[in-house]
Image (cartoon, rainbow, N blue to C red; front, side, top):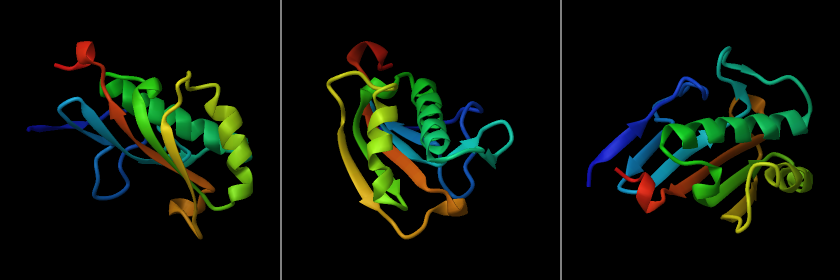
Length: 132
């Protein structure tokens, strides 16, 4: 199968040797997103709520660029430097996803790029009508 590189200016540009997402068939592999503001490539101001919200906004932009939306994510990985923030992830996630929710993992990590508190990546399966 051919792989297609997904790129949008509505999400932060890659800050390393990776693509925002890669589509193979109907499956899209979303790279990790941190709370960077796409227009300025600076970290969002605010608390963990603002960081989590910005990460979902960034994931949503990449999902749209790939021809889907967040509800097409089948597996979401959440990386947190403090697992005490996981209830906040759940609360904010409810604003972006409809049931049935994707499979998910929450992983506590010692550190993340740019010293942020949260990063998320995922795998998305596009509906048949969206696949071209």
